[in-house]
Amino acid sequence: MKNQVKIANVIKPFKRKKIFVSSDKSLSIRCVLLSSIAVGRSKIFNLLESEDVINSLKIIKKLGVNYKKNKDYFEIYGVGIGGYDVKNNTILDAGNSGTLARCILGLLSSLDKNIKLIGDRSLSRRDFIRVIRPLNLFGVKTKSLNGKLPLEIKGTKLLRPINFYENKASAQVKTCVIFSAMNTPGITKIKAKKSRNHTELLLKYLNYPIRIKKLKSFDEIHVKGLNQIKSFDYKLPGDVSSASFFIVLTLLSKNSSLIIKNINLNPSRIGILKILNKMNAKINIVNRKKYRGELIGDIKIKSSIKLTPINCPESLNSSAIDEFLLIFLVAAKSKGVSTFRKLDELNKKESPRLNLAISFLKMIGIKVIKKKDIIKIYGNSELKLNKSYHIQKFLKDHRIFMMSVIAALTLGGKWKINDKDSIKTSFPNFLEIVKKLGAKIN
Ligand code: S3P
Image (cartoon, rainbow, N blue to C red; front, side):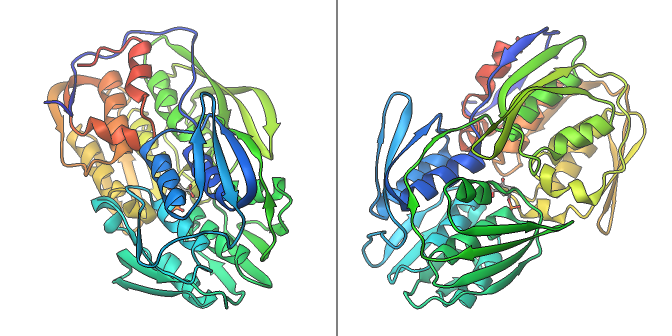
């Protein structure tokens, strides 16, 4: 089958290898969107060229923003806040990307045109009430069926600032509200449960009038609307979510070691490193530096055979939100029972990821109990697989595909894994890097 990979052997030990992974997806989308509303030409180096980001470029183009691809960088000719130029009844397609869909809505809020936002099958089952609510408070008109895509939106020049409480720890919702606030006269006040803060750091770097007060589990964010941002240059670092597949591949392989170069290590993204270190994993950060407010460094990993279970604090959920499939895999291979709580947001991702992760673990013979919002994974440090496995009904979720490849390469068994194309969403050269480390994949 064309869109399937077959794996029948675990990966051989690899030592002192160095890799780069694909660029940060969250930051790539934000750079495209922010440069589209900056004044003048921005240059974005190392932009992730995955489907989610390409769809971001296609959307800004439809909004009247030109861009050009050069050898090493993209030039984006920003039109300033309020400068989008678009015909009535334009359709914007966000493809598979929740980040793009939710964030762009904020930027559309002052556009006095009927716009329809659509997405693929996966995105069309996801919740948009979370952004419809604040947008309506600003004065934006919306129409949808049960808060799902397709969503019709009509903005207004008469937006009013709001006080908004973001309680899902969703960076997408937070960014949507910040973007809408930038189009709104006056000061919008957001109380946001901690989530990734790339938007805030970028805006601070660009000297946009945004004030952030950090409290224990919330941030208070004040955004002053209708200020312009100057065009900018940005060089994207690697994505820690993409690096995580290789972190776990190394941890669970015998006698192996790896360095992953130039990764964004923003504290709001590295929950997986904190969780795995608590589980006795051998992970170190070297060559730390700051770039435009973001922390960047290299990650060094060594095989770790004596992994211990974790009682995962809820406070780490948001900073590891895209990595739980991998964390569960490590829990399955550790000695004892791991506990996780309040992860129902995972069911609202590209697929109902929590349910699918539990099915996956059960399929490989791991006992899992979910009671209300508590999940217990009964790990087995001797876990070795020798049956045949076919990953097929996992709704083309890119992260499930990649996690399955890592499971096959570390636990044994004979695997057929469908939906290879899903990696184009976030990490198009994932399989190339896996092969470079010596994996045999057909
Ligand atoms: C993202 C935020 C997270 C994350 C997603 C990317 C972002 O989603 O899961 O992959 O770039 O803002 P939520 O905001 O829904 O938590």
